Length: 400
Image (cartoon, rainbow, N blue to C red; front, side, top):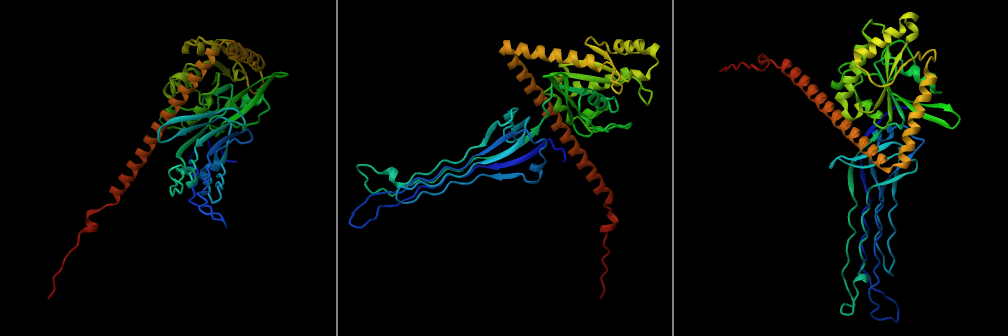
């Protein structure tokens, strides 16, 4: 199935049913009085998180959704039927944004969670509601109110504890195959990975975490080069980032310079994301001479000025991955335990994630505007090249 992580939709809540004007008419009963019933409420539109979904592709082909309107009231004090609600299933991890106000309506992280995105209209009142001691035969009713209409943007971000960063062919997919049961495609050419992949790393029984592999970044990704940076938003939910560096690049480039490219792109994309816990993984050490491994790895660390944790691994052979997974799980469990005892840490984490997501949306929107401007400029240049003054020169000949 095609992977789609963004989709614009329009939702219409149902209108409320109008009230009824009616009077009781029955044999032998004179002046029976008003008996017009109220209308029914309009249906609302809800989004529901479904653990069985992993893409928003369905919303690309059907962008408009409408709930049922309420029925009008009837005589004999009969109330109109309420309109049925419209429930849309979305993947867990979907963020809902109001396009017109740019307000984040909700972030659906729990399976089965429901979010009302459009309120149905209220019912109208029948004339029986307006009966009083001075007005025994009211002819007044009210119409039902209109339901809400909203332009929404759905953004899906994978739910993972750890995210992988690196250039294409740095060994990210190979790493996730080594530490989990996931089997993403692995090949010896760049951009093998085109969509995010998830893997569950089980260190011990009942002790595991989820790792996310995203397509590789290249220099200039913040300006739209390669696959761009739109997949980086999937890392905003991660507690820790693993930066993989190829220690034996096929093109003979410097590993330290390659690592610095990723660091620069992350800083341009989101300063908050750049400040997250990040570990350096020096991969493909099995391709280096055994007596030079430690020295070359230390040279990369020194050039980067890296002060965080560093691991020398070989993902394809599984060397060093077990120790890394154990330390990574210990770090995550420590974070989870601290949050249980200190609710303020949960608020800080939520604020950090909201800040990262806001920065990601702003940067991606800037790239979209830049792309559209470049596309318009190319079209305008092409139109100017096709225009020729000679084509519009007309010679007028007057004949008797």
